[in-house]
Length: 426
View 1: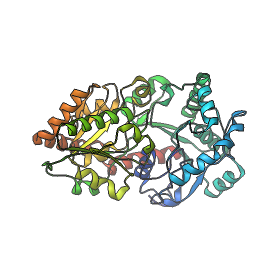
View 2: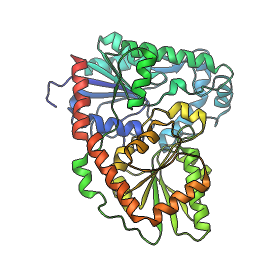
View 3: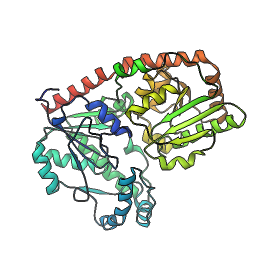
View 4: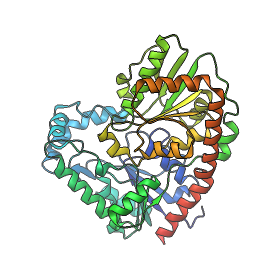
């Protein structure tokens, strides 16, 4: 990008990093944009990666607070947040009495207030934003609109999950959910361009909100990755599965646990099989996976380590929860890991419901072996078949690389995405 590129301000719960889906997406979509023309206002406990952006403002209670009177309980959570920031791991949402009580009343979210504090205003005056790009959620919707209104700049919003359709929970959760949906509707109405993560979400959101949505997913740098991808599909004596990514109750935890149990059962029967899980986000939930001799959980992988790990495996696992509550949240989502999985040349097993966009994508484009029924016997049969059929593994892997070239090449996707932002700024 030239020095004349518009100055884009990212307002998001996530920040540039190599571990979370939002952080990876930001890094891959904005790579190549002038560093002097990017700044980020965020609330991410993970440390920011400065490879793409070097100007950050971490929001605090001067900018984002629970609405009164819930803000009175916010100080009780300060010590928990300090632990989260130091460890990079979110604590269980019910860890403190204050959180437990408020969650019972209001569910997963509370009403938020967002303000442009004097410190943030001074920081923004120095940056002089010309465009806001935001990943909507919680208080960041109100904060993005407040900044856009004050500095008279357009907004580009980009939805990752269909959280407006997910159950809020709590006795009075419906009130909070209605407030959040109202904030989102206002943000979408205020947006010069509205983006979503998948074509399925684009269709649904056009019906829901009455405007056009463009789909942009996480891209992969094929020029750098394909020379390192697998070119043959022989396997070792032990059939090695790998899962890389988050372990979250509302997304993939239960299905990943099913895979872990299937691997454990096969190993107990004498089948040489192993599952390695690499996670930096939600790793505290790994206790539900039944870790044992055939299943191990490891730290998350950085950008240098992730692709060699994928290409060293015999099979990659993409789990999607089957329950209705999870499906309402992730139905239209597309995990950020998918393009990297496709480009690795390692065959993929998708385990999830047909109603999920990511599962439909795998079935329609034939880039993975799909088990779309929650059935332990069918899951074990699929693992046995994939372990024993080298020809099938090769067909799946080669088709995945074709799809990566056609749909996810960063040279194409990133250029189109950045063109949308430049036109929105004008």
